[in-house]
Amino acid sequence: MDIKPHQVLKMTQAIQHKRKEVWALNGNEAMAYAALHAGLDYFAHYPGSPVNGIEPKLKQLNDWHQAGIQFNDALNEHVAALAAMGASMTGARSMLVMKHVGLNIAADPLNYVGYSGVKGGMLIIVGTDPGANSSTGEEDVHWYAKQFNLPLFEPTSPQALYDCCYDGFALSERLGLPILIFATGLICHQSTRVQTRAAVVKERQYHFEKDRERYINVGQRAVRNHRFLIEKMQGFALENNFIEAQGDPTSSLAVLTRGNSSLHFAEVRQLIPALQNAYWIQVLGVYPFAKTVILPHLIGKKEILVIEDQDGFLEYLLKMECFNELEASIHGKDLFPAYDELRVNEILEILCKYFDQPYPFTGLPAPEIPERLGTFCEGCPHTGSYFAIEQALPEQTRIVGGDIGCSSLPPFRADWLLCMNAGIGIAQGIAPFLQTQQLVSTGGDGSFFHGGLLALLNAVQNNIDLVHLVFDNKSVAMTGHQVSASTFVDYRSVVEGLGVASFTEASAFHPKELERLIQEKEAQKGVHVIWVSGACARIPDERATFRRANYAPQINASKCEDCTLCYEALACPAIDKNPLGNLEINLDRCMRCGVCYEICPNGAIDLQAKNHSL
Ligand code: SF4
Ligand code: SF4
Image (cartoon, rainbow, N blue to C red; front, side, top):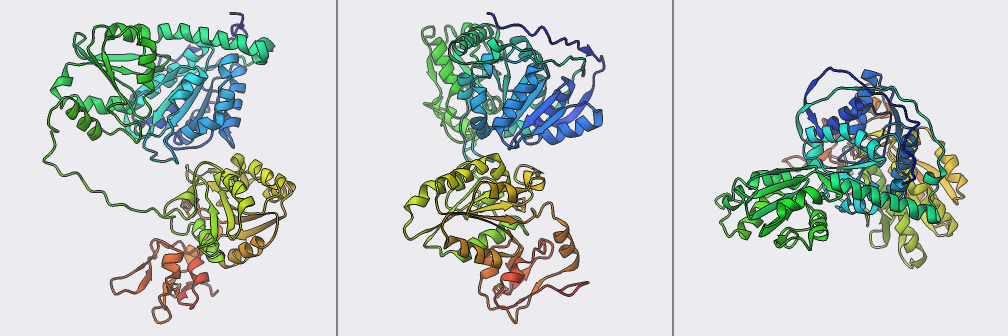
């Protein structure tokens, strides 16, 4: 192998022999502590649940400890991935964080990062979401580990996450490859006691060493470096022993688990006698398959159960790697569903049937969980924006493209929701075929700078007729109020520079004007952008703070004609009927956005100005 070793990196890691004990860290906090203690230099991310808690904790730790970590709050995952690779190419330790759908955006460079390898340790943390608890889909991104051909670990506790991240940097440097670490919401959000380790003192010399054989991957160079990667990973597969085995090794039954299912199986096995002595292997180093250590445990077994969420990645690896060497019947996705989060009661029910034993909790009625449609927060700018769209265009003829973010929250007022910038993207395919319908696409400010800017340019290039609304709530609200580029970019110049037919600014808190604008632009040819500003109610701006302090709106029952506009069409969650059937504004919830006051056709809402008249 002629890839040069990382000789330029002169890293001496003095170890502080001081052990600390930190109590009750959740998984995200544990990863932040591990990164700090392992001497992280560079952090790049695009926020997404369930791993959006790493960045704020790490920034706090960086400030407290003056750790000198460089942060890149990237505008999308593709840029974040490339930047983290760049840092690592100088010998810096880097951490790249995103959610599972973000891995699709970062996949382009990550397909090839293994060809060139890394110098400083690089961790790629991915929040996965079986059950789509906080995502538009439950894509199983385990297949990317095989496609990228990078080591994948799946720790199952905050302690394991801490250890995996802490040790992952050194492993990454030893292999010269980034390490993938996947964590579900269950693991990220649980809190347990975490034993931390000695903090590394950074004494690195950062240097980019030119090495075109390694970094210019094209043609036969790419093929050769691909071969090196395969050889390196074959070597690592032989040493991958990240498993935990328990139970009776002589049992004829073996159970393999990974991720959430390991936690659930620990409970289930207590309730099924046939499982109590089964040989149970928890697989932590999921890829490459740890054949050298796992196969000897499975020789002679009659049955093997593989319990895991989603597609059955581990089962696939087991069958592919050990097909000719096992006599056991292997069961996995023929028993367990490949969709939704595999929950403890479901595993128990399926295994009870499999072992032909009664379900132990039949006396307990299954809890009925009423469906609760979600809502925007009180005072949310999206409430007025959607009201304006719905008033501007008749329901029978309007088509509204929706986008990821708070504007996509139930009760789902758009006509589709798929991925970031699907609003403007899908609208471009619909636009040429419209006959009697009217089309509006929507997207948040976060999405606009993530990739919507290019989608808008594409719409201009294709000369379609479209009204596109950018909902600018001045933050990336849904994932934790990260900074939005709209707070520091001259977005008017950016949008006008793309050649749109018109750019107009509007306020989400003045829906009547927005309604008029939408109708006006719908009647015109070309691509029209309406930039709808309104600060998120959770981080109120000065205007919202002033109004909250100075107004106490009430509905005047003698003027109200129960037209339903404010509580059904607007659907403000602070407005409800009291037991007497009269409408009331709940002042504890009302954010004084003023939208109901503006839209009431009967002047029935009295603002009750405390200190100022209107
Ligand atoms: S967090 Fe902000 S943007 Fe999101 S629904 Fe609530 S008010 Fe609206
Ligand atoms: S919009 Fe005005 S008239 Fe209509 S229900 Fe609300 S308060 Fe009553």
